Length: 146
Image (cartoon, rainbow, N blue to C red; front, side, top):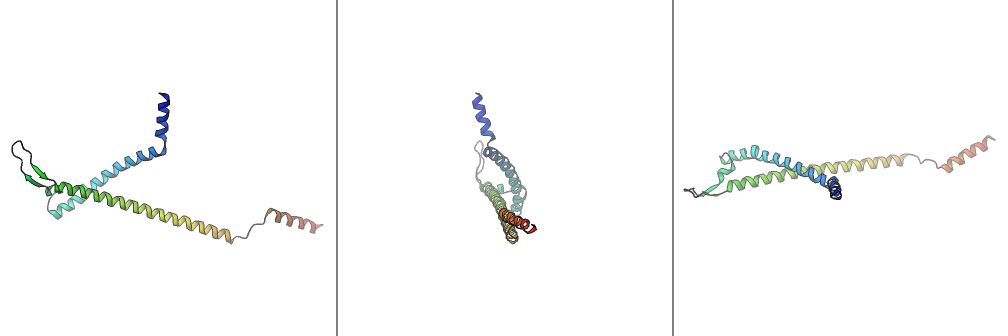
């Protein structure tokens, strides 16, 4: 049993598992944000366009409820709402990924520019004398003093 818990501890402490856990948590929060965006921003704008309070009003009743029989409804409005939700999520994800890629490109350009500047600065400096050259110069000075 102790070995089982040791393996479990190693599994949990791996980087991939922690990254996945963070991704799931952030994904849930991101889903709440996009749902709020669709519900509170996009849907009211569509309501103005379609003169309806929400997309559910676009549903078509094929047969009204009669007695114990439930109504049969073609859920076009509900489907449209789900499609809009998907499109908004896809648009936001696309925008975030595009911004991250631009930031990475900018960081790469800055790093490359810094490397080029450092290489240029190193090329401009006169070469430093080697140990042998320094020792030879000291020896010559000592000989000159005698």
